[in-house]
Image (tube, rainbow, N blue to C red; front, side, top):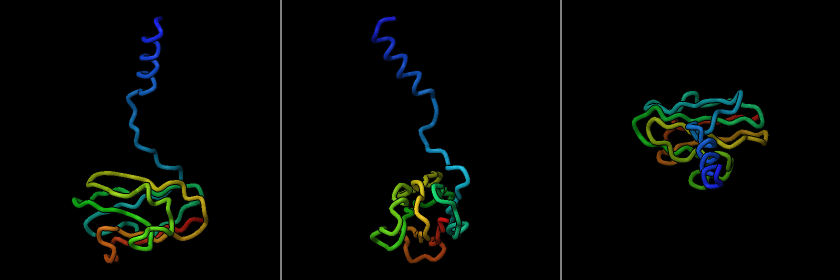
Length: 120
């Protein structure tokens, strides 16, 4: 097989038509954002797991760790960021035992869009 065709074939085969969205870490937690707020607002996960945020609301949300506006308590939340309606995103692996409080950066004072993730 000519080299150019082989390279092209390997590239196409590597794509496989699969989604590039990350899959949830086994045993992690999912928090769904709706017009009523985050549900559940408080979850517990094991070290190394991730938290998945799903936006089932019609509005954009930006989920980050406290404090607002620095978001420095749990940098693993930076990978969630902006959630347009219908999207799902995950934290990075939560490797340190602690409690991470989170909020919606666009509405930081709404208690229904605040919560915590306890990492054991």
